[in-house]
Image 1 (cartoon, helix red, strand yellow):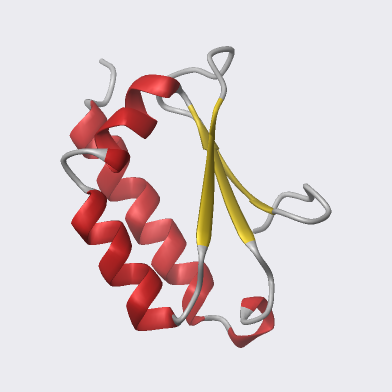
Image 2 (cartoon, one colour; image 1 turned 90 degrees about the vertical axis):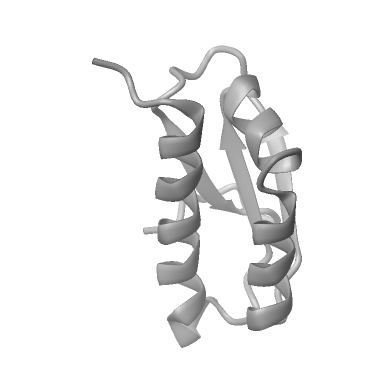
Amino acid sequence: KIFSAESMSIAIQRKLTELLKNSKYKKVPFRLIMHPDILARLKNEDSHLLSDIEEKYHHNLSFRADPSMHCEEFKIVDADTLQELA
């Protein structure tokens, strides 16, 4: 059973919120890397939710599609170092 794009969007939003609540990531630029289909969901149907997260935590997010990633896989990395965050 594979998660839907909607389920993955929710999982990404939860993980993102969890990281942004942690003060050690306050100044870290976030880049989210995921399958193009999941990114399309985030950038279209759920774009307002991401805008709300950016505004609430005063954090800019960047996104990259990686077609080699499985649709249930995503990474949140430091945009400067590309080091994966927790």
